[in-house]
Image: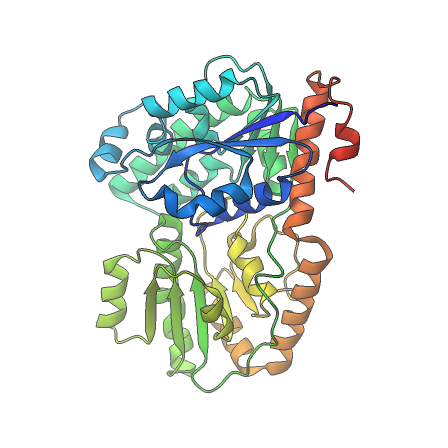
Amino acid sequence: MNQRPRLLFISPRFLFPANEGGKIRTSNILRRMKGGAFELVLASPVPPNVAAFADDIEGVCDHFRPWPARSGSRIRRTMALSASVPVSVSMDRSALGLAAIARAIAEQPEVLVVDFPHAAVLLPERIDSASVIFTHNVEAEIFERHAKLTTGLSRFVWRSQARKMRAFERKTLSRFNTVIAVSARDAEVLRERYELSSVDRIDTGVDLDFFPFTPPVAGPDRGTIVFTGAIDSPANIDALTFLMNDIWPLVARTRPLTRAVIVGRNPPESLITAARDRNLAWRFTGSVDDIRPFVAAANVSVIPLRIGSGTRIKAFEAMAMGRPVVSTWIGVEGLDIEAGRHFLAADDPNEFAAAILRLLDDAVLRETLAYQARARLEERFSWTHVARQFESICVHTLRRSGGEKHPQLAASTLVA
């Protein structure tokens, strides 16, 4: 009896708790691939309290190959600015990680998957397995968008990082048999930008059982909007600054009792102080175990992002729960949803504020968007569907690379 081929999945960060987009996407895909076409081996750095996540780890892989995570201190990041590769790449390189990956590769996996281009710094020069790289973003694009919105020394730093990332991304992606993007838009950008011949894409998913639908609540005079995400990320800090300085005054002028709940880890003290000094009705929750009660209690979910790449899972989570979304185009970039039918789109502060106010005032519009968005998610965007796409790409990559010794793949794969 033929055994399942072994797939080594290398992540540059520990997947748990799954409290940000990349970790949510990866952990959900692996969880639904387990028991399918491949024997899954996950390799990643681990924090000191890794034992607390034993059940989570077991749920996403058959075997785990860890190494101790390195400190991400400010001093290390500052020193990494002089490296030939971007800071985010330099921070993922470690002697312990290189040794752990070398041992895992010595077990001769038939397929090797790298999660984020950063993790490629842990690989040997030669890759003998069928190889796949999973790009959650067009990495250089993030730095380029930061550079456009900053000035002075910050702009110089972001431009320098963008140049390094373009070079690193081009060289790294070309090493792999298959590149996976998280949207058709990203796939096309990667093909054109880096002249890649084999780029596939998957959809973005959402756990429709974990995020249950409830009809949108009525909009009382004060109303509540919600923003979710890792508040310590530069993109989310910029989004909240944009919301606070440019959009919120226009909302408060018409609805002075409107509140905002900002849900996510490590909100910068500068934002908390600015909200307090202006006497804004903003609440910063910090890290929470479960975002659902905060989303359920809101009238509108907002995504005022001006920086980023890839796709934002937070949009689908709010839509799954029946909370209408107002977003910039970058906030929903790459998601196959329609403005005016599944969400309201606005890049200009006046238009963004007007969209929030429309949803707070118009119960029919709130319900129409909520039901149509949930129906769209149920039609196509479950994590099971996305895992099938991902597994199918890995199977096809193995076949193209000489995987004929595993004929059972045709029957055991998750693909319907």
